[in-house]
Image (cartoon, rainbow, N blue to C red):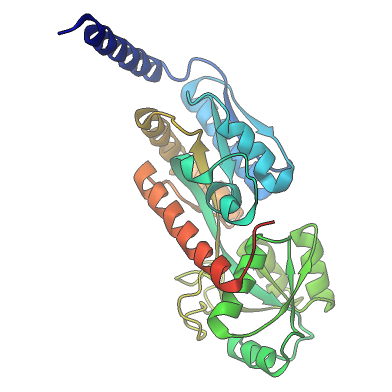
Length: 322
């Protein structure tokens, strides 16, 4: 064997051995979970719940850092540039993990390069409508929209938000046309739906179901494959006459590009143990969240399915990157 080849093989062996040792000793210092949004959100609450569990599991500090701005792209870019050693990861909803490259021009990171660790939790969205709207069912809503093209309004948190894409999906599948009304947050949007200023809003079960039970708005369908446990009387979109419609808000844990698969698997094992604990399961239930606890491979598959679903909607609806 030539000396250069021997040196190369030796270098690879030493690097691999060092990586294995580093993973065996992981974590040996503080781990940071970046949330690409301000404190106080569901994402932030979930990240702190996971951080607390991992801190106790590892006997090492796991801290949450909020890096807001740029439609969550600022924080995501910071994680993408981090050293892929497991000490900086991101907890985020769908956009910066699976959709940002379809919605944003000149993005300074590639969502397709994340190393999936696990799905942390998910929650179905529902279609909440104003009590002032003269419809009671999804089919009545669709008929009303077709009879009044361009008059039905829907609230969004901006272009590319879950609410925006969900409404676009409804337009694509049913052939209706509506008008988007942007808001700075879900609560402001809900206030106007309750007041009748805006007709409808795709919102999560957690916030809309209590309002529905209180008679402040109507819910015509749940955007998941099965009925919601906390509102089993509400039909799914398929049951209500729009098969194939799905809109779920979810939260994933991802590591920077080039993070070793073995390390991601190591973190996954401990994260799943925490997510399946009775304490965390109970706390997630209070937030109306279902625990994810998926393997890295299953998480990667889910991410790919989400990108395909919303990529098709974005294309068919003619949504252009901003």
